[in-house]
Length: 108
Image 1 (tube, rainbow, N blue to C red):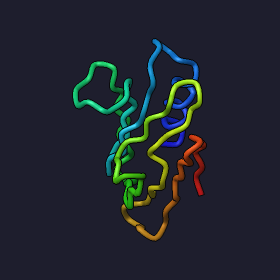
Image 2: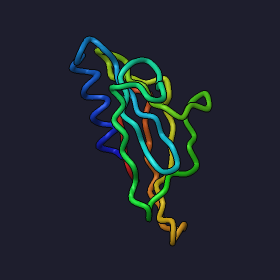
Image 3: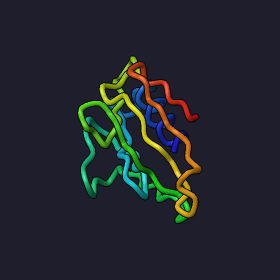
């Protein structure tokens, strides 16, 4: 999940196809997408389904967002916040993913 977020940010910073990129966060998958917002079925979407033993919960991104979009040239995002990766069979075992306004991604 962190690698997909980092890929979206680095691809945006390199201005690939003169576009920005983002990641849609769902309970069982993350989707790398091209553009300023996620569009279901877009041809450039790259779906990354989580292993069935892992889930995403407690999505708390700015403005109630479920996607993180990075700004061209700066890598900043208006959708800063956190969400948790957790083990389905052991919900107390989790890791928090944080995305700062500057676009830095961390896992704790």
